[in-house]
Structure formats: C-alpha cells, structure tokens
Image 1 (cartoon, rainbow, N blue to C red):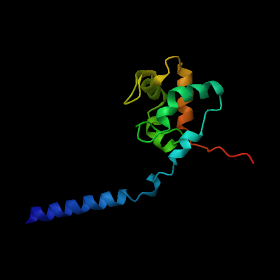
Image 2 (image 1 turned 90 degrees about the vertical axis):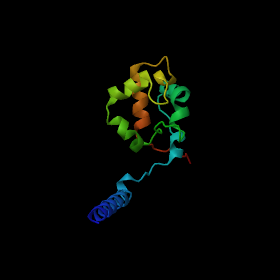
Image 3 (image 1 turned 90 degrees about the horizontal axis):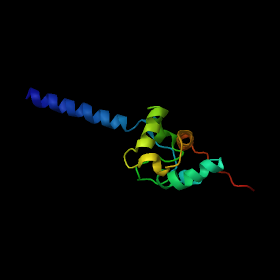
Image 4 (image 1 turned 135 degrees about the vertical axis):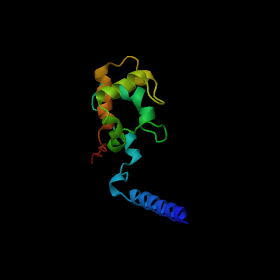
Length: 128
C-alpha cells in the first residue's frame, strides 16, 4: 500500500513538472520560417555561395538544418563555439555533407556564412 502511494506521488510530481515546463513562455518559438527564404547575405560573393550551397537546406523546415535567421534555433550550436561549428561544416554533421556542399570555400567564408545564418532575420522592407 505504501509503495502504491509513493508511486502515485512520484507520477503526480512528474506530471506536474511536464505540465509546468510546457508553459514556459521563454521557450515559445517566435520565428516565422518563411523569413528564411527572404533574407540574403549583402556581400555578392557570399550571397552566391549561400545560394548554391546553403539555402536549399537552411530555408526548409524538416531538413534538420537550423533555419537561416532563426537565432533561437541556432543558439545551441553557437553555444559550442565557432571552432566546433567550423569542424561540423568541414567534416560534415548529421545530414550535412562535408564542406557543406562548398568544396571551394575557405574557413573565413564558412565563418561568415554561419554568422549570417545564425543572426536574427530582418525581413526586407518593400520600397514604396
């Protein structure tokens, strides 16, 4: 009887924990995935590399790649440091092939692309 009561108590505590963690407003995603396809590096050379090597995966939900402009989605990766990110790009990681499909890119270009994709998206404004 005592064991059953203890198990019910533990289950109640676990359920309460799960419910409370689901209500944390700081963990709500506020990023609109459509923004990923609307932003582009300002530098023409970097933009060309981004178009041919990064954009396909980093603008589509469900690829497993963090979306361009979703700084919250990138944060876990950025917390590891740029050296770890560069290592992942160069050696491949998860579904990303080695060199991120850019065999002619150098480390500085990879770093600039990572920095661009991890920055918060600022949607383009239309000229009136």
